[in-house]
Length: 135
Image (spheres, rainbow, N blue to C red):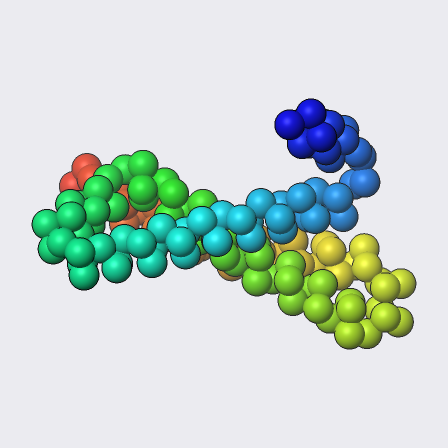
């Protein structure tokens, strides 16, 4: 356990600028997507065990905490896809490593351009679903 604590401490104390934070966020978003997929498969396969359990899970998924989780999931999916594409391009074309800082900034811009409207639309729809329309 102490090795895990020291790894986490070293990771959080390292100041590698945006490259380090992209590395860390890529790992976290990948784990988040994996967790979602595991929960999704378990939840959907519960229909084979009991329709009642499956229906209860579907109702639980319609609660505000899960709506907030969906926002994190949407961001995680978009970020992980764009950052993974950046990494793949740099790995396939080593001569582009000279432009790594530009590639990093471009990927951040693309993530923001895709995630902001997606999350805004999702948030508005969730607010309307939980609190009714504002009109």
